[in-house]
Amino acid sequence: MGAEERDGVKERARALSAAPGPGTSGGRPRVRLDQPRAPRRSLLPEYDPEAFGRLSEKIARFLGTGRFIVWMTVIIVVWIIWNVAAPGHLRFDNYPFIFLTLMLSLQASYAAPLILLAQNRQDDRDRVTREQDRKQNERAIADTEYLTREVAALRLGLGEVATRDWIRSELQDLLKELELRQMVDAESEQESRRRE
Image 1 (cartoon, helix red, strand yellow):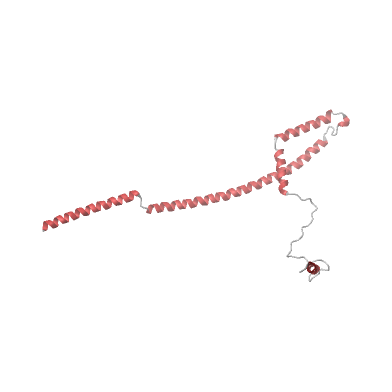
Image 2 (cartoon, rainbow, N blue to C red; image 1 turned 60 degrees about the horizontal axis):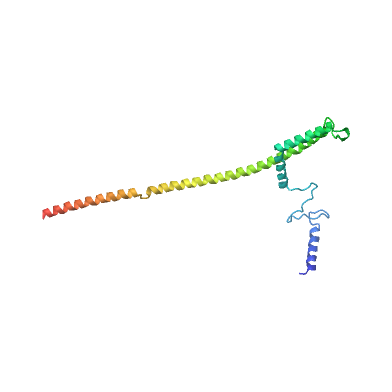
């Protein structure tokens, strides 16, 4: 089949799939159930949730350090001193420090969800770790029960195994029995000789 014939077959297939069939309205194309839908375009920006989660954990980890508190204190002190002591035309946030309050509330409004996201990721990791620990404990319990059953079976088997002490006692009993028979035989032989 040449390239032109393949193109012709593809064109006819497209025309047939686009043609309205029974149960379709007008010129609306048929929905193909045997093919996946094309992904819809989203107005929201796309991002990698894993990378965003790692970034949020780094930020939350930094927000929980003494270094962050020191830097935040230094920035606030410099901000206040600048806006109190600087010449009037260089001040950008006068006494009620409304812009400083706005910046601090903006920082807090971003910090809280980032900390919650980091905690949720940690909870997920803890849940996976607990699940793995639970499975490992179940395997350890199963192994312990198996070994317990094996040890019990060995004990029962050892009860039927001849030990060195048991064999010695049996041999001593046989030896005594042989000596006793020899004595009986010797006595019966002496009696038979007396009778003759």
